[in-house]
Image (tube, rainbow, N blue to C red):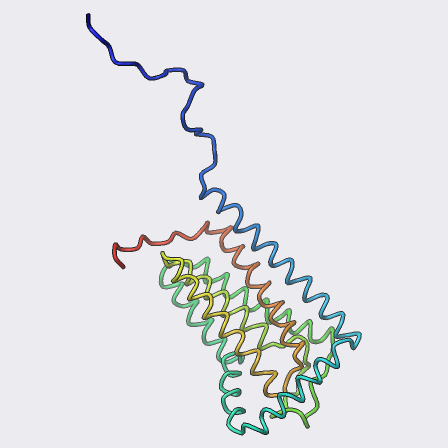
Amino acid sequence: MKLTPPQPDCDPHHNTIDQSAPHPNGYNALIQPLLLVFLAALLALVFAALSSEVMEGETRSFDMYLLHWAQALRVGHPGLADVMRDLSGMGSAVVLTLVIGATAGYLVLTAARATALLVLASALSGTLLVSLFKAAFGRLRPALAYADFLVPSLSFPSGHASMSAVVYLTLGALVAGTRPRLAQRAYIVTAAALMTMLVGLSRVALGVHWATDVLGGWAFGTAWAIIWLLLARRIEGPPKHPTAAPGS
């Protein structure tokens, strides 16, 4: 008698693997933008709450304490001011303009014109909003007696802190999106965040900004960078990481 091997179940309604179940990568593609939207909204609320406290004078004791501390630190360590001025320069309009211009030029050369336009738009719109916020809140800077040098413009939010967050975090995220390994991406984003943090801290250490100016600048700048990164992802799709070479 001839034996026939068992036949697979041909029932079209029976599948050992549910083909309709979403792939794990699909969940990531959905969850990551939602988390970024939530973070941007949270930072916007922080900025709104902080600006309200600043205008009501509720942060004055905190700001004055750090202002006195920064002044005492400069007096006790005379070379510190030079270091802080160098760090502050990383968030100046001239340096950030050069960084943005060089980045946009490179993106155009690599045929990423849409990304180049988004980078330029994020920086220009961020600069405009910071100027509008300063005019709306009208907060004066710390007195010259506490500052390392005179800055004539208004204070809240810090333009250096805001725009360094917009520029460095945006560029850091774009560069990180080209790397295949999580450790590489984490390092790049962490380095961008560290540069942003150092610029803001230098403004407080030099006495040219209240600490809450910098906190407000970080909150706004980070939220603004996230919004434009989400827009870039919406237009160009999720980043395609190159495959890492074996053993690399």
